[in-house]
Image 1 (tube, rainbow, N blue to C red):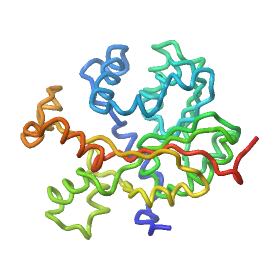
Image 2 (cartoon, one colour):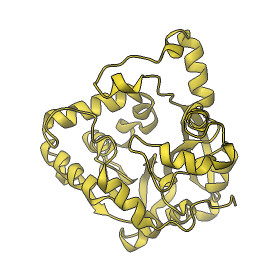
Image 3 (tube, rainbow, N blue to C red):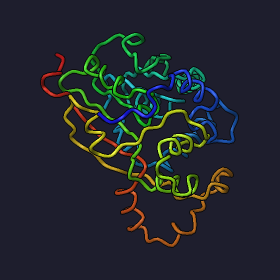
Length: 284
């Protein structure tokens, strides 16, 4: 098992960080909590990260049970429910959940979603173990001090045909290299702390792990990984992006599309995997 760089971090630090600024909170200039706000948040998120709907396969889970670990303000949650799934969505941030609950109410989906504030490292203390058809966690587990603790609980929530979909950050990515050069001036020996601090829009994230393919496979021991891929390089200039203008950085503007996509699929920030339980862990 890889050395745990953030072992001594307390999960309360993670909760406090995301309560201060829920993920994607500023993806709209409309009044926070309004239907127009949530519409714009979703539109912008999937414009910048179009691989998410393809990975989640929302319509595949119609009439199925979905457990989402780390729902944030509920963009994917709403789309699972909208597609006909029954969703149990957990998050450590009560502020994020308040917005997600408001979102479900606005879209008339409260009867399809159960929101629970929970520490995923102690999942059975918050969510009654029972099998789900999909366990989904996009960009979340790498922010908890002990990701292996979260994974250890999953067999309690999966049957033999259940699917687990996860996204964690990719160690060998354009963004990691960019963070190392821009903020660390090449100080690669400080990379773990540098990446944690600059991995999100709001600096100072207390915990951010990154994974190679081998490290993700190791994290998912006890599961059979059927699919992995890398995607997502953010190409836009930040000053314009925060003004809701989509102007690419000059070096991305001069790249042919095919080469940019080559970079995305080899050095993207998002490392995604789909897995099932091994036979010895299957529940019936």
